[in-house]
Image (cartoon, rainbow, N blue to C red; front, side, top):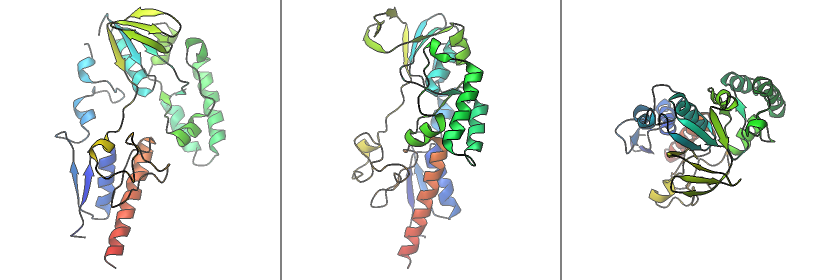
Length: 275
């Protein structure tokens, strides 16, 4: 194996997981990252509270300001909560249906999914969530028709784990807005015709992979959006020794699976090379 060295681009969760799996097979690797440390988003740009996704400089930088959060995933909902907790007059745009659960319900669902069909687990989770949160449609939060576990399995979309945001929405402290029609300077025009002035707008609408921009000859693995061409769970392997971990949009569990598959495949390739 002395002639085989694996290059890992990115020292985030996917890169570190892949490195750990390679280490188990004693396969040498080099990790490169544009930052000077591993997991730079958590080390340099996040609160001490691990639940938070918002950068440090936005902690205070909104007291008494009118702030609009666009996006209702975990990041958007937690950002809205923290803005409201720091005194901002907070609104959030919730366009798509979302599942809202507690951390305990998600843990229960993951355990039940090991022994029960996902549709049955979903039914139990939805009933429990309705009991805990009540009917959230009156507050502008609609639930998807597909259950949370199946939705995650089929699309990679994660359930929103409530950290207190729903309670603030029910109290009217955080206001739910509909889809945006137009933004003109500090005026946001919503599709319902309502116009509101905001001091700041935080876009929590996700991120886009840029791997297809800097990676040359990666057309066998990535599409124009920087995402795998192949469908999950066969997305992680390209041609000519190219692999991708964490781009299947399956969260940390998906990253772990990708890392194991990549390490196992590399050891198989090494075995074939050595005869």
